Image (spheres, rainbow, N blue to C red):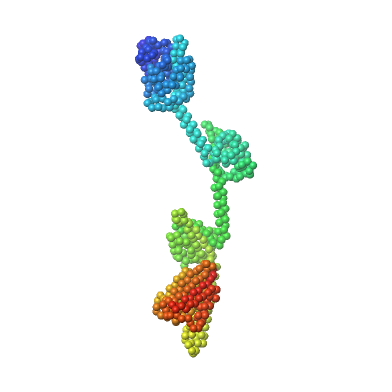
Length: 608
């Protein structure tokens, strides 16, 4: 039997005990003994309910609740028991005032995921709830209070919001992804989703809700419909690389070929059945066209190399050959890679070739050498090998690029030419020696014959020295500085000459003419001018002007010699010097200044 008949039915959990022990006499409800049966019955029901419930009794909404509601009340439990609802939840007083007005007027209210800010744990927090309010009638049949069912939905609401936010984020990522993306459903491959990149790829046409055959009819016969059908049937993904697709990207325009990398990924349900296909890819048209152009360029380059008389090769930064053209194998029967390059080198050229290549690799200087290589038939042929380094942004060598050319025929021609020139020079010298002997016999016994003979022989020697210089250069020309050096060699030991000027290449005709003129000037200076006294000096300066084509400006100037007077007669030497202008197609000025002879030459320079 119950301890107190007045409490009959007011039991159920922790709150049952608290309700029975509460000092209700201090509240508008008074002692439990005086409660109307309608109140006791309602309290008894809510105390036994597993659903969070609270009764708001009377005009002040005095609160009586169950165990489930106490969990919702959090830190405000048990202070809420017996308190007026406005005082128990002051932060939502206006909301509860509305509830009480409606409920005590006999109305009901229902809210789903109602958000309210509560201070359940001392700090404001947003709380979402499903709220149902119903009036409770007293013995007179009038509403005596309001019964509230309070089910908190905060966790579910926040979870749904997180899921929705994640969905929005995924959709944004899907929509804004630079790659093409689409999702189709069913065996007809109806577009469910397609991002902006995909729609742009297919020309901006409407695709959502249409099958791929309907949206992109021009793909018929290109194999894409069959690929989708195969993935849908098999459930296996498909990866496509550099696949061409002919699309009509604008209405009325011709089909345009685009290239795409893509994957077709089947989408399955919980039973593993395929329900759709995820399409993801990238438009790689520009990259593919560049790749095709590069292949064409490489083929063009390789064809040009194969047709060239040279063979191309490359080497690593440390000098190891890693690629050699096919022509090298045609010549030598070896690959040219690794040590095989040195195996066919002529023994007399190997050390020199290795030394030059090592210096190039070490210093980064271009490689340039002529050497002999052993051919398939065992003969040796002359080759000309050259290589230049390619550097990165920091200046570091990343590759060597070289060529080797068969120059054997040219080399043999040069050797033959050298033999002919040497033979010709030998015969010219023999002729000059014969002329010298004839002159000696001719001048013998004549008055002043010794001086005349020496002068004549000196001119022959000057001519022979110029011939020697030209012969060393295969009669292709000579350096002006070398011609001057030979002409004044007999007087240069005591620093009596000052030579100054750039490198100038003379053709054979100009070299001989200038050599003879310089000999005459030197001989005259030794007899009468600056070279006839110990203090005399001669300055020879030259430069190249470009104001009206390349022109040589040469100046001979004597100083610190005996006083100079113009000659009373014009000898052979003087006439030879003055004729230099006509020989060179320019002008010669020979001045006999008291300070010393000055000779200036201006003449055009041919392109060498």
